[in-house]
Image 1 (cartoon, one colour):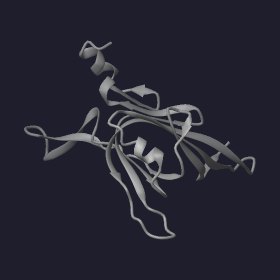
Image 2 (cartoon, one colour; image 1 turned 30 degrees about the vertical axis):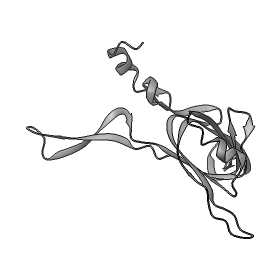
Image 3 (cartoon, rainbow, N blue to C red; image 1 turned 135 degrees about the vertical axis):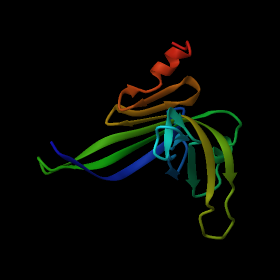
Image 4 (cartoon, rainbow, N blue to C red; image 1 turned 90 degrees about the vertical axis):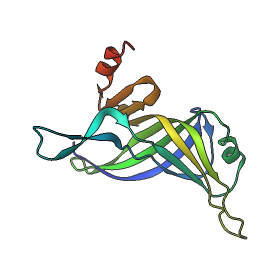
Length: 173
């Protein structure tokens, strides 16, 4: 089988895995490695070296059509558990059939900014919530591909936990 991923058919956003939050579009976070410059004797110049398993700030943004109860609820100063479930359309070039693969992004995040939007007759308001992501788990077709948990020293990429030896060295296992 040779699957060609084509597009996201649709998705939904839930809180705590069960409460549908509404109609939104989602800007997923960028995963940027923390780096530090390595230079000195024996190196021809400088190397911007990533710190294993450590990442910069990860931001998630939900853009809403209107101001709603769920938008205000997400301002609460606590960690929110959001579950974004989608369906990816893929094409199997062997069978010539479409195959739908589930994608799921689970985050624990804290509110950073809420844009209340604009009041304009017969128009969307453009309300938004922005969050700092402290945990993310990305699953495709039921298999976890990425799990980053900043407070618990977890960085699993494609099944390999890059921070396991760090946890062991720190006496956290």
